[in-house]
Image (spheres, rainbow, N blue to C red):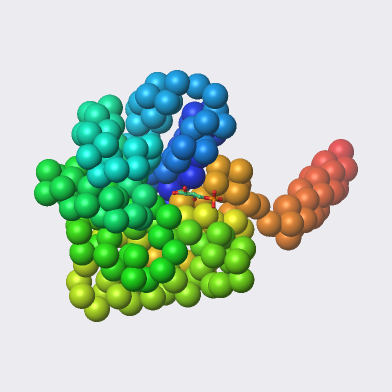
Length: 221
Ligand code: E4P
């Protein structure tokens, strides 16, 4: 499963990218606004750091405005993917953009029917929002499972990006469900490699080794 960083923080992206762990990045208006910097500059910086796809979201709400903005955003860098909201206007826009070869990521997907429509109009990616579904007492993971089955049934090439990931279990669950990509908040990514038993085990190994070396030294004296 591919891992994307769900952040617009350039420093965070640099650090994780150095470890060779990320295959792409997703941003949204909230994440960009949080950085308080010029949008175009931030997206271009991210696109230079990361080789893979970088999603930048349109802010227009009508299809004409989305198409115009999408053409502009896709000119910012070769690896820009245009994020389009899952609305009727959004679907109209994706239908046009996919025919132009502009890559799209249909965002704010909360049902299998929405995902099906996005795939039908040629979306490159769909983003089901797990955490926000869990928040209202429904199952985010079930949506990913349904989308997987649906796309496999009909051979849609649209890739599923599990979004709104809140914890490590979400990542494990979507990987087991055959999801193509998980986009994970920058602050959550270290939690994927951290484990208290790893730290505890390592501390024991270090202590035992230090004692052993001390003994060897004493024997040699
Ligand atoms: C990514 O594409 C989404 O915009 C993001 O994962 C949303 O996450 P949130 O529900 O934590 O805001």
